[in-house]
Image (cartoon, rainbow, N blue to C red; front, side, top):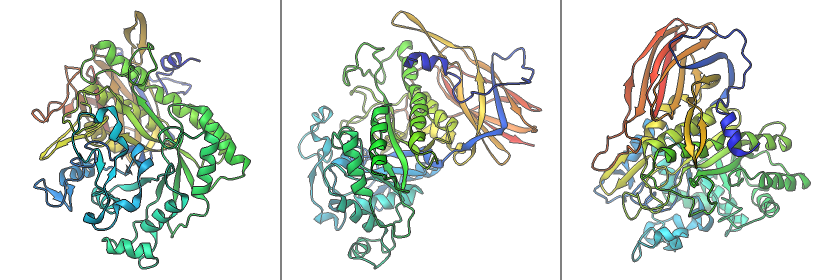
Length: 551
């Protein structure tokens, strides 16, 4: 089945359930949601709602790190407002220091007295988007002012678990072991433990999540999968645990490269090597090619973050929903090598990636404005992860601040949230809840794609339950038509109360700026509940959350 046909025929993805005894639907509603309270898919790992931070442009410097002597409110040099906002949405895990930056990073450069740390050339110094930067800009020449200890403090302040991406391309396996030792060896036990104490933390950091390389098929070494499997074995064999249940995350495919996955695991199987610490298989998928099939060129396929028409609005979602096929296909292949299902998918880079030109500040390399369109794409992606809770163990939105699909923008003392932040705020209620099987049915959306009629699902979403609270999230991508929607609970339950919120705007290009920081924000949405069902009108171009309290 080709990709486009898959997307069209799987618009009700996650709801593959044969119905018997359908409830009587309201004659007035045009859309329906049926939630099966007794059909749990699995627990939604909080780690699905993770974030990604890289030494790229304004992500670390000015985004997270402002310095201890800054006039910007900070805690030990870390921007206070970003910490407060992360706590608001309960960010569970943060990936660092890359990304491709990790593939040229020596962790030893970022520890010890700040004034003694070396200045290194940043991985991104020769990127075309860096040409506008002048002199010895920190974006080009890494000062290492923000290193392991600062990142750990950032995680501690925000309440997130650290996820470290190791350098497999240009450092030996011994340095991976030494980094684990620096972070996790008991107080006073080793020379590196004493160095950690001298740097401010006698107690170990107890880092659980370790990425064994990054994009090893590309910037992480341009390996063949069999070559990467050999490196993976060297890096992960006999790494001391220090009492911490280490979770290694392998460098998985770009997009849906099944050959990479198959060849890697075949190479491990030939060596009879499947370490119990291998708990994650990384997948990266960016929604970048909006050329409608005209090209596969990485640059030519990109379009503008702000200047798009109705077709561009829908095309982003058509491409973004390919994430569902990736999850299904990669999970299916993993089962051939891991029948016990110990290894989960880790989608630790995802989001929209546009051409340059809409960044809020020149230092924001790969920066782009974030609109309502990006909020819907992010919501659709999170709903895919929720619906496949038994498959996806972790994810990381790329990136947290001043970059692709960012939750925040900052520049010196200015700081704002984006529509994507509001999606994570709405969806935080899903974290740790039980994903429920749910069926969405709604009139399809039709648009012209290169002169051909194309359809998208009219309504997509997910549902979860924790105790007596049911949370339903849904996207209505239709630019013109609201969805009068009836939500019905199947199971022995009655609705005691319900409330709803929505993120929407009449302008599909709506976004926040430093001058208008609250142009796009959450609003209350009316909902009527009676018995085992409720009725709600989901506006055009919207993301909505309905919170149902059961009697």
